[in-house]
Image (cartoon, rainbow, N blue to C red; front, side, top):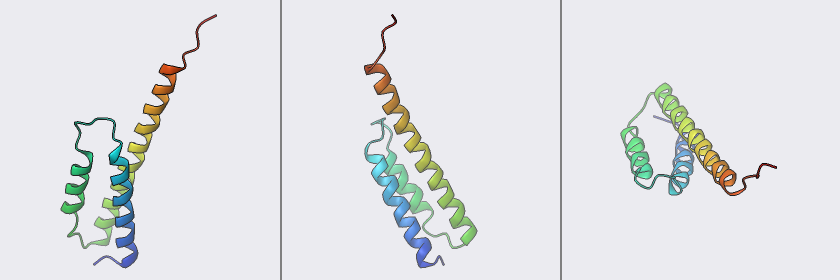
Length: 86
């Protein structure tokens, strides 16, 4: 069984991903539904190595989603503030 610190890390990661899912750019993509199913699928993991592997995957997804949001903001700014050639 996972220790209390691992449980807190999992809860923190879930909350962070859930908050990120609120603003996911594609409304048709069920981000929070997929997130919930992924966490429910892994709720019975007991091997510490498998738990760490799942946490690393979650962190990777979080970082990729943050990068997607940054790219979306950059594209929006680039579209709105085009410098006219002189």
